[in-house]
Image (cartoon, rainbow, N blue to C red):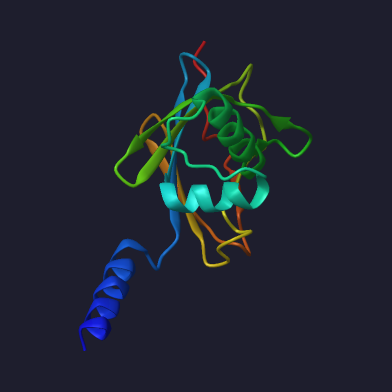
Length: 170
């Protein structure tokens, strides 16, 4: 009876520590004066480790004391493959500025510098679909007083931004 009680107790603890929903949030703020998109992505730390460990030979623990420069490169490479910006003709490359850990989340910071306002502008967020088909990626876009939000799912993860949404100041 004690073994059964202990088994149930450990199963219950394990059930509490996992989550049954898979979601990320990406906030994109357009700063007209600087002609930049400031991008912040929040993901569950355990989900990010799980997806990275699919592609990497060595087991990755993001919070571990290992080389954060190496981990940053791996995080940057994955994010740049999965969160993309394009205008239909070519892709825009953004800079990975770094990441922080908040409890069970990883928050990544990126910046995209633009020379001019693109006429057609698409955002794609396909984080974690390889591992979690039910993954949902929320995208919030803010430019001045204008706001727009999207819900990316595996069947639709790319969205067109209206032409007049990004207004540049001279």
